[in-house]
Image (cartoon, rainbow over all chains, first blue to last red; front, side):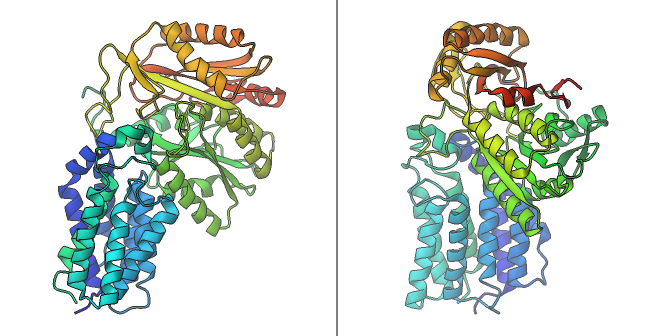
Length: 210
Length: 333
């Protein structure tokens, strides 16, 4: 069964729950190379987003609501970045009643493009792009192969996890971490970490979807 | 954490309520979305001047709202950028038909949030420009980093641009002036101690009892080097030399010299440092035509100071001298 609006609601709730659980861990990662507010900010934005979700809303309305909630409540760089991700990803859902693997691939591709437009990060800059890009590529490959959604999204989450882990040896070139130069090496990027949670939440929420 | 607060989550709101209670003649505070706006309204046809950023740097920016400086300011959470809905509401509130200039300090979050606000304001038909301030010479590598940070120069620029807007500068001219000021100002800071963000509860970074960080950012971002504490005169020289060499300031230049406390350093020490900074400026053949001394762009309770120097022509000096009446800066009015 493909995805409909309630599946997106379940995904966003699962993402919010995961960030709430891992808030202290995200903050610890961010304290090492940033300003230590990533867990706090993401949790504030996402709990507001979850409060705003209307169970009867369409997919595109839901994504827009989440985007606006994140933009207005998160602050820092994460608000515009995740807000733009949801805003641009949501636009791709407007013409669909339901989403299969190709539509989900298109959704995350649009989100990635939005994040790169807003943040101007390239791969290997040690940012959320390093987790999101491999996930999008995995989804696109899965769409080409006709892989069912539950499998495709798990592959994307696995790819995001690898991408996240691969940020550890990188030297940061964007955001506050970039001021550390060499000293940013040896720390996993907090933004890539929350992006892995975004994908992993989808894999959990959509584990029985085709 | 030992702080004179009630609960960490309420610090920004309660402090703003205090500002509103203390300065009703100068400013009004709006909540949800949160912004501070001048109490007497923006005169018709005057360009609106807006700035904003994380809280914790008081008096910047809220304390510079009033007459002759900012028309509005958007405070974020402590050390966290404000959000586009705040900026959008403030921009609408101060648009008096001549457009609005956003003064943005160069931090990833601030720049992105202001960019989104600009897009939103433009879709409402308001002419908005923005100038990004990046005067911190401590950041040597601007290519592979988020670039130079916006620090003390922002204070001087907000004063000068506020005066220019009052004089009737158009949005184009104000934008050009703001960019010209940014091109002609350089700053560098240092820290003797860290600071604690209330919601974090722990110091932002660790600094040993006998250590200092040269080139610190206003949120505790790392600087050029960490070293043993030295006498003040040597510390001032460590800040002044890169400032002078970077622009570079040249013999015969007129300058505004600004020595700023990071919050925890008392005025007795700031003046002691100013004495040496002025002496060094003179040795470089510079003429200190105006100055500013005190806590204007702080980092909570961090001990330390920053030095800012701006090359000033007659226009800039005239704008600097124009009357200003805000909670954080007042002369001639």
